[in-house]
Amino acid sequence: QSEAQAKDPRTAFVHLFEWNWDDIAKECAVIGPMGYAAVQVSPPQESVPGNAWWTRYQPIGYEIVGRSGDRKQFAEMVQECRKHNVDIYVDAVINHMAAGPRNYPAVPYVWNDFHDCFEPIDYGDRGKIQFCDLEGLNDLKTESEYVRDRIANYLNDLVSLGVRGFRIDAAKHIPASDIAAIIDRLPKDIYIFQEVIGAFGEPVSEFEYVGNGDVTEFKYGNVLGSHFKGQSQLKYLRDLRNWQGWLDSSDAIVFTDNHDTQRDRPFSVMSFKDDGARYFIANVFMLAYPYGYPKVMSSFAFEDKDQGRPESGVHSGAECFDGQWICEHRWQGIAAMVKFRNVTSGAFSLDNWWDNGANQIAFSRGDLGFVAINGGSFGMSQRLQTGMPEGTYCNVLSGQRSDFSCSGDRVVVDPSGFADIVLSSTNALAIHRDSKL
Ligand code: ARE
Ligand code: CA
Image (tube, rainbow, N blue to C red; front, side, top):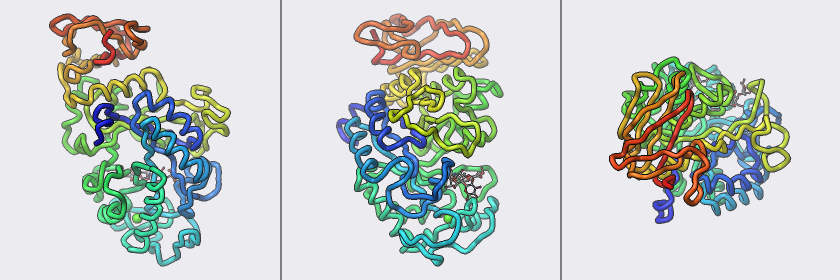
């Protein structure tokens, strides 16, 4: 960690799903000041043609070219974002190549570079999970030195353009030791997180991957969704960070929804398609609660789950909140909570938990920040211990502090740390060190 990072901690990132490189370059001037650490970008390598969003998960080579732009635009984006202290994480599709004939002259890969199991994956069988074709996608022999070198060359090429991290797509389908061998070929300070959908009863577990870097904690989105949709009460989220069978906080990537779960919606996952206020307070919880490295999902609107992105990108013909691009990451309250998480990161503790025995909850993060969430159907009015130093604070979820004024509600903390907290149903309030007036 550099000195600058220590002074300016950044603790949450955003997935700008299907955005153009040029548009992300411009967006970094917006999200850098908001405090986002990084952008996860869609797979940048050449892939099969088509309009569906998922064609990019079918590589045909490792040149940087595709729907989001070309190599030059990609490189410029990385440099532009760096100016605003925003890193780029690339979604690395390395388990497989496209479906179809096993011949990719651009790499090159030939027949012998792939496993020869053609059966559909049986999730009860480790060998099949890792050596058969996921959804018919040709499964690379990641145990081969030749294949490892080709993959590492691709990733190192991206690193040479300034990329700081990778999401390893379909990591469950690659033995953890193969991923380790590939990472060994990269610089040591590259950030890695692996997409492993941990599932009860399956032989390949998310815990096998923690030695390589962070891992997605898929239970999180289901649990958040079920609680915020009223299938369980918010008071039960209190000890979530210590729940048995969950990844350690320091290993976990968490999100309300991702580009897959917002389409297939397993169990209880929430997305922008749900009641906006409920989805919003779920995001407030994620960004306030000390567990994992949160990823904010930034979506485009869709009816059909295969549907591709809108024709124009944000900044290149379209705009956020135009009905096509949802831009959850720019919602005032979500952006304010990213700042909250950064400001409170010095206290990775959970203090002064309060609940009303049901869906009204509140807690502080040491003496750096305090949040209250009313997920119940009645108004909330409580005098609560905030853990904060005496003073008047701006509720960053209702307005913004500028100099010594606040465009939203004020919260007055008395000398003993108590404050009157008043909230309507499905609403939240947050104050922190830097929102003091
Ligand atoms: C598309 C078509 C398929 C067609 C295929 C080949 O939809 O019908 O067979 O092309 O022509 C994405 C899309 C896929 C798409 C693919 C390639 O989601 O629909 O296939 O791109 O274009 C498992 C994996 C997990 C994976 C999910 C989707 O474990 O890694 O399936 N997620 C990543 C990405 C996806 C991406 C891929 C992998 C492929 O995030 O966006 O696919 O690169 C249980 C199991 C999970 C399993 C889950 C769903 O929960 O425990 O392991 O996830 O079921 O099957
Ligand atoms: Ca594999």
